Length: 481
Ligand code: AMP
Ligand code: MG
Image 1 (cartoon, rainbow, N blue to C red):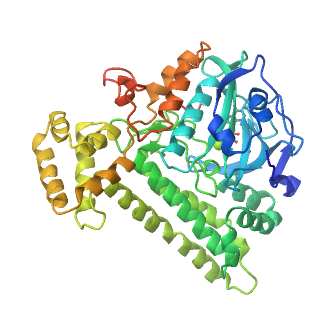
Image 2: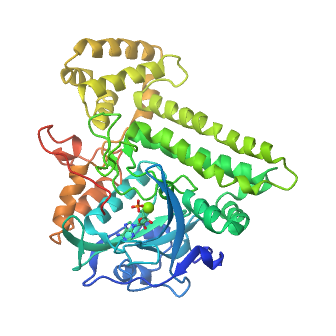
Image 3: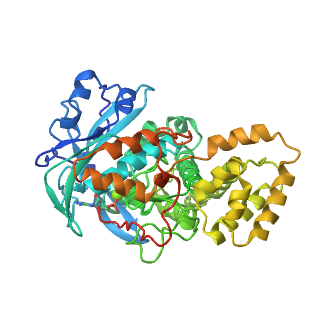
């Protein structure tokens, strides 16, 4: 591994050095060899993956640390937070020259654990492992993981579960909440910290007339693109607190996440979210709210030669990019999913009509787009109670496509509509087997979701292709992990 240990060049007030505390009876869960190759792991490191992913081996080149940050949780100021059960154990350079964080989740309690035990359970570890993998393969910027280990150590949640650890990778673990912590508790660190964020993650902004405004705009745009992609793929993050969004717009900390099955815009996968703050349809406006909170932390960075009121106004103007960027990407992506030309004035209306049908008929989001892509219009209609509404939609749809290059549009659809997503019941089956020490279903899903846009008849099962019947109780997912 090629190290670029840079976070620990920051002032020590921003972190706490400590070693992972291994679990009893650590054992192999799953290893992402292709990712290890991307990260330029040596053969020796690959052979030692179980020791690395269980906290038994750390690296001389990087002294592990827990980061401190703060955040707004469910809309309320939560004060100081931090890595309560994860440690940054390395920053390494991948094949493309990019620095990637290695973060060991479940590595024991830290000064930021509050009441928590510093552990992660096998159930949530597998959920995060497979979701990071599929998001990356769906083209959504996200954390990923090199591997995870299980153990023989019990960890208490609603019931006693097995402890596990996962070696998460991300281009950035600096959260919006890092700025909130600094501004609230150690504001003298703000200029240096911001400068480092720009140098590390947005070096092109250093040449802008106002690097901080350019940086803010970039963070806002990347977050907007990420959320547009979530909406298109039908992903609900579940806990969009400001401590769970990073500054590079790559998906992070998605514990109680879910992939949309039957189309319900007000769907919430996280049963700890009693008020429905983080429903699927709210994600864009919550992203905007979080970024607004974050921008407040840049107010003290007003350059000496700048009018203070003007600075505030200019920061606020950066936020205007959010809606513009979101809509641009969402509309373009939706047109691709629909097989409609993005420039046609009626394409967006037609897509909305399709979504309304999915909603009122409670059809599966992913499979309905695949049926549309395969021109299986009758099959969709057969599942509709209101067949006339579908016929009305289809007439408009076909009239828009009538004078277009439909082969080209269909080719775009195939790149925008996954055959497979990670349904809760798919993950659940893999978890139940893994809890009995059988990782074969994790392996099957890992392989299937390595190529989510490609039909894999030999590998798929019927359950991968749609929601469970509506009379089967849904898998419950809460913040507890
Ligand atoms: P989350 O909303 O899951 O991202 O977690 C919010 C905060 O709680 C973060 O600071 C976590 O590090 C911390 N946390 C969550 N679970 C645990 C745990 N089991 N032990 C210690 N800290 C935890
Ligand atoms: Mg978190």
